[in-house]
Length: 184
Image (cartoon, rainbow, N blue to C red; front, side, top):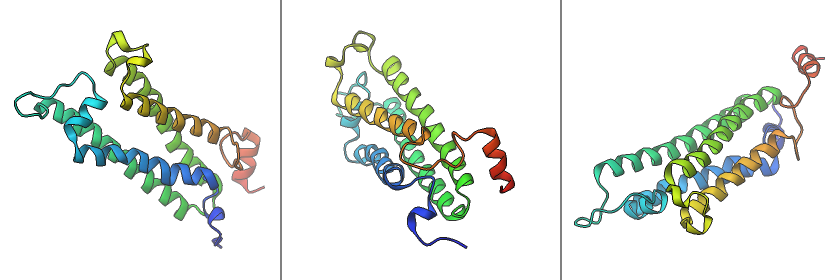
């Protein structure tokens, strides 16, 4: 029988975690997509400092436009992927918190890897070498991006640590895992 209480339907992401991963993070991840379509040239300059607008047209060249479009498309893909996978886990695994946590954890682990590669890529591929370790030279987008990615990564680590939630899969011993699988 499926429980009707909201927290019982999504035990893998209770309370704050549901708010953060189901609502806040997708909205924050989608915001660059929205901003790009309003002001693509300015967005590119904030996010990719080595790009310059073409003086005659006040727009980006085709290579920069393509790179920016691909980056925005990746933001959109992450939002859709997370939204649909979490919704499917909540709906189809409501009576199996262990499986639900396993699916949610796989997504959060993949996103944690992306958080790390985003920070490393930002600092070693995008930021010019002379400014890499000079935070005073970073633009507002780099500060905002780094802050948000670090917050996302920290909340993922806290979730994996089991803080503020019941663990059903991650952090369980092999014996507890085997007993849970047998229904003991």
